[in-house]
Amino acid sequence: MGHAIAVALFLHLLGVAVWVGGMIFAHFCLRPALEDLSPQLRLPLIESVFGRFFNWVGVSVIVILLTGGFLLMQSGGEHATWQLHAMAGLGVLMMLIFGHIRFAVFPRIRRAVQAQKWPDGARAVGTVRRLVVINLVLGIVTIGVAVLARGF
Image 1 (cartoon, helix red, strand yellow):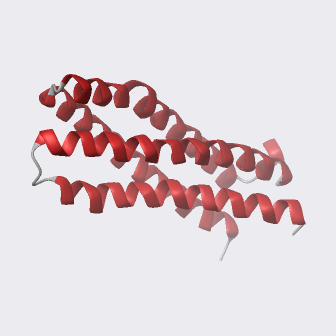
Image 2: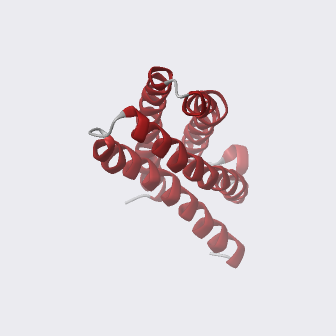
């Protein structure tokens, strides 16, 4: 394996670890821990946490996209295996869902917190939760496809 490919693979996997690991933390650790808080405490905390997390995911998405494209080209481009094309397609779908969360849904949470409209914020958080679950499943499937692409 060439040096550039090894570096690209490392950065790619690091981006995946940040994104998928962050979704696991948010869904299975943070969300249940916040359930007992009142909306007045919970929603500003969620806004703060996700504001930071989404910045990390944004960087991860860029890294994953660039390194994934590079690795795909190194693996034959359009002639690469179906597993690599499946990973690319699932990754792009995940990125589109993230873009919707970050640029359409998350601003609703921000506005609700600023205006102290707790029911509006709770609805937007529910939408984020559902979309994160979808992306988490897609991420796990993508990791599974990546393992299959490596062979046994």
